[in-house]
Amino acid sequence: MHTAAVLTVSDSCSRGDREDRSGPATVEVLRQHGFVVASHEIIPDDQPAIEEQLIRLSDQVNLIVTTGGTGVADGDVTPEATCGVCSKFIDGIPEKMRAAGSEENPLAFLSRGVCGVRGRTLILNLPGSPSGAVDSLQAVIDILPHALELLSGKTQHE
Amino acid sequence: MHTAAVLTVSDSCSRGDREDRSGPATVEVLRQHGFVVASHEIIPDDQPAIEEQLIRLSDQVNLIVTTGGTGVADGDVTPEATCGVCSKFIDGIPEKMRAAGSEENPLAFLSRGVCGVRGRTLILNLPGSPSGAVDSLQAVIDILPHALELLSGKTQHE
Amino acid sequence: MHTAAVLTVSDSCSRGDREDRSGPATVEVLRQHGFVVASHEIIPDDQPAIEEQLIRLSDQVNLIVTTGGTGVADGDVTPEATCGVCSKFIDGIPEKMRAAGSEENPLAFLSRGVCGVRGRTLILNLPGSPSGAVDSLQAVIDILPHALELLSGKTQHE
Image (cartoon, rainbow over all chains, first blue to last red; front, side, top):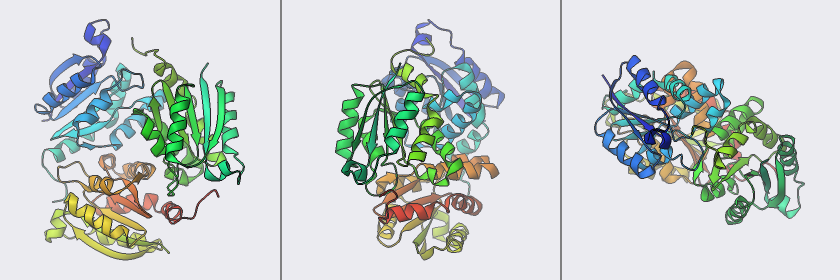
């Protein structure tokens, strides 16, 4: 059983100016696929704050899924925060998310989300729109458990 | 109305030993898609010189499109120059360019062009061959205006 | 005629606890495509040791192909070692390997192999499983000679 935390990254949601629909939608997809969602928090688009949360959560769960802050606007810094706290990156995961997302919406190619490893925890960035978050997560969720098992120390070849 | 600058990066074209066909072809595609092309210059494959031009042009236009210097040869340094002056990268754009280009020419996978952000300006590297430059640009030109609007401060979700 | 070296990266194979099937399979594919395979060695998943071998081999051959150590487990450090000794990266090559591999096996998206340039030598990381290594290599082997010719100083446009 893998544990997960969801982190909505959005200035407007954290101020309460906009309802967070992506976070709950992400939680639901994770639960449907057997993940135990330990927490869901909303934080602003602030790189040091995001990094601090990622560091804290990586001690608690196997998978951290963020939604929001992956665009090209000035305030979008979720990928930068993720890169700041991870030691390894799995480029094929965002590749697959963008390829899948672009079948519905060509703007999926603008999503800058990454997938990185911190210790034994996987950190995955989803786009901020509810449909973008759900579609991106569904595109890769079947391969995440294998990655999480390898991270937990079960090796493939030995 | 978005403004653009085209930068042909080529030792032989800058010396006048070879005609620059990629630059004018790139200018034409941009104009056909409604961009105001403010300048077109030719510079050699020299990383500091390319960086200097990218820095200067990024104060003047919304989009800088380079052509040339994206290959694997020793002198090909346009991606390195672009990385040197950008703070963010949009990996999905070169992914889409390579995927589209490889339908015509499998060697498109060797193109190392990147797409980065400097301030509010997008910098896009195209390959040096006229057909490679045009095909690559056409593969992504419909999603560039959205990125430019986000960069100019119009946010998507708020 | 291009020269190549194959490097199997695996703790268990280097200890003799597991038979190295990926290395010989990689050698065979290279020979079938006209490469002169100058050496095949097996080393453990140790980043400094891998870097040392890559540096040494890059003085001797045009192409170094590694197999193993591209996964997400703690000990998988072949991409990090490759990044440590290369000055340029050709992202389209792992993109194509993952896209091709995922047609057979969706877990191919977890492979973190890179393709980099050190001096005039290309370094290519393949996954550790025999089928993953062979399928990934076959997906890109037809475009490698062109890259090697450009690296050896034959330029495309001039």
